[in-house]
Image (cartoon, rainbow, N blue to C red):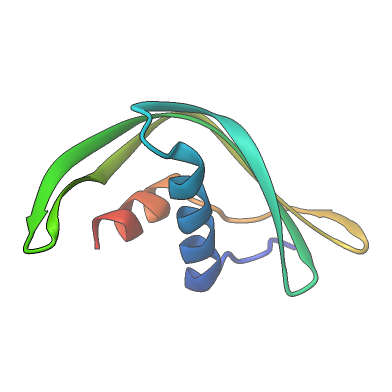
Length: 97
């Protein structure tokens, strides 16, 4: 059985990934987190593309794309690892919204 990644889980993963990336233009690392009894672990190496965004409060460099070199997304519950349908393209689509 394959675990389906929800849009909420994609959002949470993206938020944590952006936090880990910080101001870098290339990121390689991993992070783990728990969601509703599910242990998740993201391993990723990716190029980070940014664009300057100007607002009345000032300008900042926003991440506009992530191009993966390598990625893995692991999910596990109390019974062990679960195969999942994680798609890095879905993560990139969410980033562009």
